[in-house]
Length: 115
Length: 109
Image (cartoon, rainbow over all chains, first blue to last red):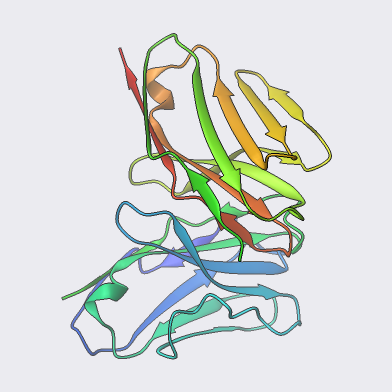
């Protein structure tokens, strides 16, 4: 597609439920990133996929968070047993390669609200 | 670990210059970026600079890099109301970007 597509754009869930967020990167982009942005805060790195290499999961805040990516296409971020502090905008980005040279192209994000 | 710091708020009058500052801790940063986030919108890459440069100019935008002090700044000349947004500084070395908290730029008419 022309840009990075994320779905859903908004998600309201009850505390304790699992949620799955989806990211479609730009075709041909080998690198894919997930970030979290809490209200009024900066971007917090979560996880980074680069081609077939093992993902960099160093930013995942707890074992309730996991992410998968199929080859160089779609990625899903799963949050199990959601808590209110998980409420945030989850941003996905992709880039042609993992060296940061071209910067990233961000999606519009998924706004997650845990009630 | 890596850290990027920015002041949180800047207010200027339309037509003035804005200077947004950023400091970072990773001395091996390869690229440094400025992103713009408008209300309800995603992040837009404004400009970037390689760590072996000390200045880059792109129309109304001037980026200055002081590698010794690990200080990056973004100057916006002739600031317009449409420049009102949150500006994020970011650095990259290992492929992932580390972002600052963002500086909210308020432009008064």
